[in-house]
Length: 105
Image (cartoon, rainbow, N blue to C red):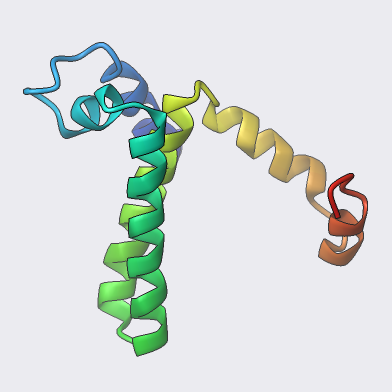
């Protein structure tokens, strides 16, 4: 099992935990909107480090982004496996063709 799958399973297990005992449980208890906001904050921090060119800080922020993405997905009951299946479906398709095939493009 990959580290992302392990992390997703840990996040899922924290859903019912006491918010005082777990940062993940605390985030999830605040609701999907707060989880999305936190993901956005972490994404912006990663963008800043990418612009600065600091690989070590970008690596740390990228890890935060992945964690907060998984928390946000869990807050809306979207399984990592569902996202991975979507990536598999897109594999081998040109990004331009895939985007053009979306109904909202």
